[in-house]
Image 1 (cartoon, rainbow, N blue to C red):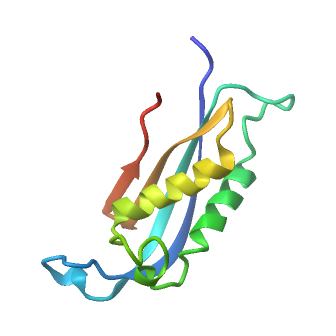
Image 2 (cartoon, rainbow, N blue to C red; image 1 turned 90 degrees about the vertical axis):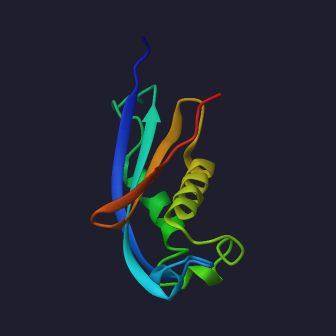
Image 3 (tube, helix red, strand yellow; image 1 turned 135 degrees about the vertical axis):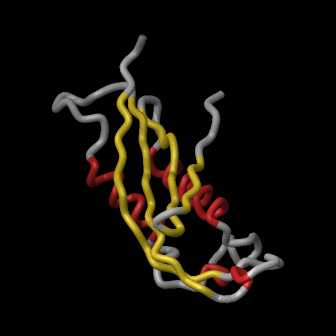
Amino acid sequence: MPARYTLKIVTDFAAAHSLRNYPGDCCRLHGHNWKVEAEVVCTKLDDLGIGIDFKTIKKETNAIADQLDHRYLNEVPPFDEINPTAENIAAFLFKGLSDKLNSEVLRVSAITLWETERACVRYSEEQT
């Protein structure tokens, strides 16, 4: 069985949103302090014994989260067209980070996005 290392960083951002057509309070403008957990899997280590530097994962995750930080998400593409649900935000973060980090020996395996201390969504994609 080949080696598999899972590395994870945690970061955060603050943003407001309102859920379009939602039949409850969340249709009104409100904000969250979102917590992001980014998981990366690698199958090979470099000469130092590192799969990818945690600093690199955090830097790239923060670069994507910075597009959302202290913003009204309903005005930020793609959420100006799709509902800024936790599920859609997690998928956005996953795709953005995957575009930056994925390689032959490294891939983003999951994003967990915490909307509150008690509610989160984990987004991943099946390997083909």
